[in-house]
Each structure stands twice: as C-alpha cells, then as structure tokens.
Length: 159
Image 1 (tube, rainbow, N blue to C red):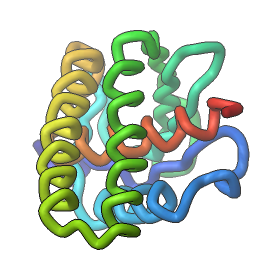
Image 2: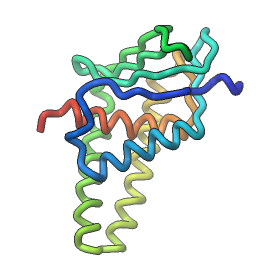
Image 3: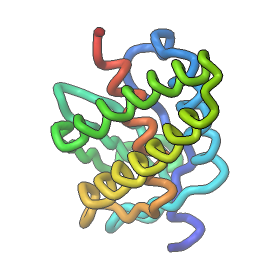
Image 4: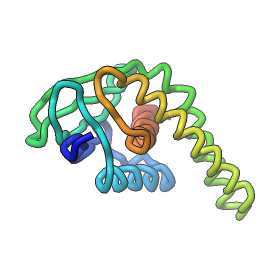
C-alpha cells in the first residue's frame, strides 16, 4: 500500500468515555496511540489519507470514512452480531485480568495475556473479512480497530 493508504485519525462516536474502567481506558488509549504511529488502511476507489469515525448505531458497527478535511467519502455499516461473541470474551478477559492483577497472580496474568492476543487475532481477521471488497486493512491495524470496537460496545451497553 502507498503512504497515503492510512488513517490520519480515528474518532470514536457515541457516549463520552467516562464509563470506561481503567483497563478499558488504557486499552483504548494504547490502540489510538498505536494507530496514530502506524496503520495501513486503503478504501477501494478513494485515495487516502482518511479520518475514520467509528461508532455503533442501532446494532451496527459504523465505519464513517472521510477525507483528510473530514469530508464524507463513504459509510460502511456492518452487522454487530458476528462480533458479539468475541466482544463478550474480550470483556470477560479484561475482568479476569483485573482480578489477576489485584491478586498478584503472575502466571494467571500471562495466561490471560496469551488469551487476549489470540482473541485480538480472531477479531482482526473478522474485521478484515467484513471489510473485504470495501477497504484493505493490514492485520495490526485491524487488531487495534477490534480493540476500539470492544470499547465502543462497552460504552453502548448500559450494564
């Protein structure tokens, strides 16, 4: 991909981030920071770079893709259903990680980290499959976007 095939910025749409746990907030910050440093995202038929407004509306994952002036290019809405099992597992792992940290269980923390990596890999592949034919996203970018999808889903979930 070319140097212009990238996201300049990712904007999370929806409710304020005040309801996030410290671990989810840390995951969100790390994903955004990593995306700012390096990503690969190419929209079919439209040169980049892009600004991505990522959100959840009416049970759908919204990729509102804009040009560098923040002018609309295209909106891709994906059903959230295929993501839900992975998102649920992600949040369970975050809770388990928090408990393991509180208890100081190093072996458990390492096992959970391995599980999180595997889960992020699955989420990345799902994002890439669902965007196939619409946008080309490299694996690391898709992993970071999956983290942001999980954070958004937690914000969208009133529990």
